[in-house]
Image (tube, rainbow, N blue to C red):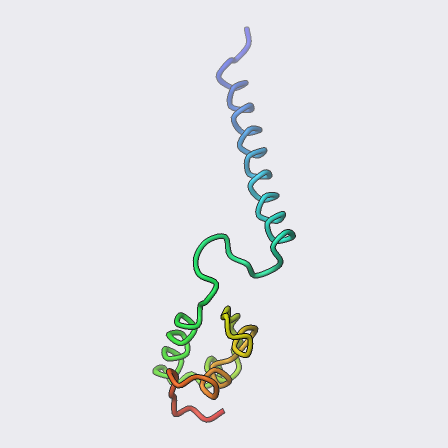
Length: 102
């Protein structure tokens, strides 16, 4: 007599693995089609979020986080877009003002 309950669990595990592989492959394919860094949803402009991160680094007086940590900035303004640190953004934006000297 066969154990039917055990056999069905293998089918469920195999189906779950197949679904996980398909999801992973779809995200990998999305990166190939659109290029690295493109998001599936949301704005392509994250300057406001980066400013908040830089203000938090300034308030905590974290010189390394403010001066050296590069953040990926998405902006329609090509001079801001790319990997930038907070010091670069401070010199190019009026919204960001911090007393940390890099």
